[in-house]
Image (spheres, rainbow, N blue to C red):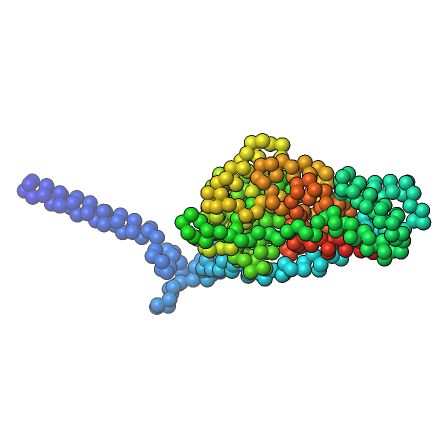
Length: 409
């Protein structure tokens, strides 16, 4: 009997323990968060079947409801500065340069405006009633200050004195004609002023283009002159390759390449600080491969007093000559430097055998006599003159047009 009572007690205790666990589990389950869309615990009222109960009112920032906005693609998003992704720019349109023939004549009015102080001054002095020694000294001073040089000035004055004395020339038109003849004689109308574009034949029997080296000191406008010369040559029907052998300035190669693209000329360039002789050699090689008519090599500007730089220029010329003779060595001189330019010219002529002069900024000075002086100093002709900033303001030098501009009233 005692065992029966003990068994019943154990059973009752076990049933009570199991019931407690069940009730505790239900309470924990009731405290868990309801699934999305289900009514919150303790909310009054029942939601209609198939619909979610409205959310409880919120306060402050919680009151804002998220608004779904359409997403933008990368094509819709603008780049900084208002630009958008676009196709790369089209290559520049190839220009047609103005014909080279007659450029100096077309630009004569511009040249005359800045140069005619010399012509007007000479005519005024020669028109005096009494051409005494003082007047001839004034004439001589005017010519010297116009950068003609001492020796050419003395020669011109002596001729003028003799002709005026013998011929008795006095009228303005007679004096103008007399001056024109004497100035033309000094400038040398018989000199060959054409830029040599005749090529040759390599040792392998290939046609070789004309090779033109462009040299000069810093600041004379050498790279710009090279680019403008390319336009002159293209206008005359030549196929041109440019060699950017000024490797010390990256801007020089970029500038030359821009000039070339404008007229459809390919530019050969090397790494910044590279060997300029190597670039010049590659440019001529490219010209041979492309059957070009002319290869223009722009060399680095250098001071004529720096022996190492001048030696390097000589090396460029020797390396290029491995393909064949250099056709032209054009020395670019700034007309405004006057007699100082003659010192520069002398040194360059000794190193690379200059064959022609390109005189820049001639429209910016009244000292047109530098044309006579530099020719006398080097024994080589002025072949090109720069008369402005325009792309086609480099002109083949024409002595008659130049003298007419000097004497323009």
